[in-house]
Structures are given as structure tokens and as C-alpha cells.
Image (cartoon, rainbow, N blue to C red):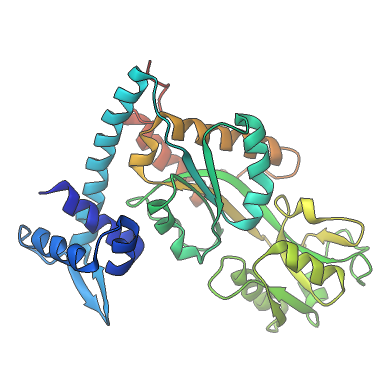
Length: 333
């Protein structure tokens, strides 16, 4: 099978539409469709199907796209081997992070690697299901999900855990609950809330809290950017769920964070990457630096992962598999 056509199939799976693939690769949509049709002519089973006006992958198409990723990974590893011998890999390492993670991690990462370390940083805050697709445009994608939400699909990406971060309630320092060391769900029944937009990971926290409170939370404001949320909270116009570590830079004398007693509110912060991206030595170096930065930042503030945590087990299996295949080993000469 033609590798370029296989790449188009993988891109369609990650980007979600022929138009998006065409725009990303700077070719026409008709050219994409023609190449996918040519690929289909070599396969005995349907690789794509129509869902409304969109062309999406079938189960067979997703399986073939995953196999294509392994081929792409092998090619990238060979290219990295040559670059290592020539001591020449001038391509920047592209890193994206959702807003609060960028606030907490980007500056320490630059201090760790140096301001001229060949990084290209971007903020990309999307709905949870869209994070894996960002690996089409970035080498490393800092993503998050709630503990009770589905784990990332490791047939598409390699998952490396960064943080297991508690979630607290942010409130004005003059709020009636601000003097309590911890608050209970019953304390929150009649509060007004600032929440993220529907589909984003933290929006599910309020639904979980509502079940514990016995009453749906009243959401007055929907804001994704925590720095804006903090301003609303400081003004006393609502309270909000915020992550303990990544929201720490926003805490001042006018806003406090308080844990919810008896309720486990946790989110997982992970790095997602295509296997081919991790074949590059420079990408692995940046990933290692991200892990050091996250460990240093979280050590005094966060509890260790539970030994039975499903997410930790899954991500350890994902990373271990790539270590066995040699792509996360020590750098070659």
C-alpha cells in the first residue's frame, strides 16, 4: 500500500474531515478524496463511510490507520538515526497545552531547557474528545480528563502521565465558606457557579457535585479561561471548580481554594503524542523535561497516585510498550 495514501487515512481519523485534511496538507479536497478512493481500491473491506455529510473511518479503517502509524514511526526513527549521526535536527518541537497547564508549565519548561531550546509553544483548549486529534499538529499535547471519564485510546497515541491533580472550590476571600478548612457538598447547595463550557472536562465536575448535593448547581457564567473565572470569583459573583496546582498562580488575598470533604475530585494531566513524534530524540528530550517540571511543581502539593488507579496502569503500559520498542531509550550517538 502507498504510504502517502495511508497517511491521508490517518489524518482523516485525527482531523475529522476531508476539508480539514486538505487544509492541513495544503492540497485540494478532491485530491484527498481521489487518493482515499485509490487506497480503498486496494482493500477488500470498506475503510471509510458517510455520516451525514462527513466521511469517517470504519473499524477496518481505524485499524489500518493504527498500522500506518507504526510504519510512520519506523520511518521517523530511521530519519532520527541519520539526524543524530549528522547532529542536525533543527525542526522545532511543537508543544500545546490547555490554558491552565500552559500557565503552570510553560515558563518552568523554558527555564529547564533554555529560551532558545527550539520549542514552539501554543495554547489549545478543546473538548476532551478532541485532544488526541491535536497530535496531528503538535509533537506533544498536554491534555486533561477527569478520573471517572474514559481513558485515552492508546491505539491512536502514546500516553505519558504528568499529574494527578486534586480539584478545589475557588471562592472570594470574603465568602461565607472561606474560613473553613474544607467544605461539604451540603454547603454548596444554594451557591451560584462559574463553569466551563459543556464538553470540556471540568464541566463534568459540577454534574458529579450536583448528584452529591441532591440539587443541580445553578450556573450563572460559563468561562473556559481560569484567569477570567478568577476575576468573577474575586468579585463575589460566583464560585468555581479549579485545579489545585495549575490555578495556584491565580490565588491571592482576594481568592482562596478549598477542598470538598468526602468527595474525590481529581483530574489527570497527560501528554499525548503520535508514536512517530516520539521517534525524534529532541521530542523525547522535551517530554522528559516536561515530566521533570511537573514532578518538581507537584511534589509538595499533590498526593501520589493510588496503586490501583486504572489511569496510571494504562499509561504505564502505554509508555512501557514504547520503551520495549526502543523509542524511549537513551539517545543514540
